[in-house]
Amino acid sequence: MPIAFTHLLSGIIIIGAYFIAKKPRCFPLLAVGLAAFLLPDIDPLLYWEQYMASLILPSSFADLFLGLFGPRPPSCLHMWIFPAAIALSAAVMRSKGNRLWQYAALFTIGWAVHLALDGVLIF
Ligand SMILES: [Zn+2]
Image 1 (cartoon, rainbow, N blue to C red):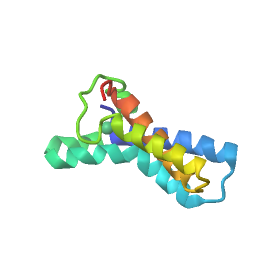
Image 2 (image 1 turned 135 degrees about the horizontal axis):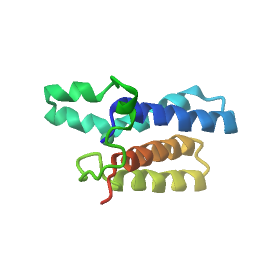
Image 3 (image 1 turned 60 degrees about the vertical axis):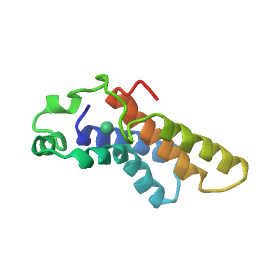
Image 4 (image 1 turned 180 degrees about the vertical axis):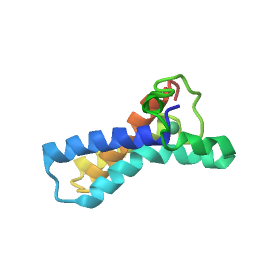
């Protein structure tokens, strides 16, 4: 499981690339997109232990790569069913002409990248 800052950094890179490519004028979209990269990690708050504070910010450059893609069992928000359900809702919203579909799509991307970085393999 990578540290929280690694998830934020991946979000900044991907959302930044999206904004450069698409040039959307909606900056709440940026905030929602970045939040999606971090949201799955609120479930450790349910079983918080003191050492977990060291998993938020890096203390060295190597910490950015700590635990990347290491297999992790699914738990609470770390299950693929959530981004899959949001992707389905984004597709439905787009087909019905709802302009909020971009929020759902970015949320799906953020959540899916988070789970991939965490090495979650099972639904
Ligand atoms: Zn996580």
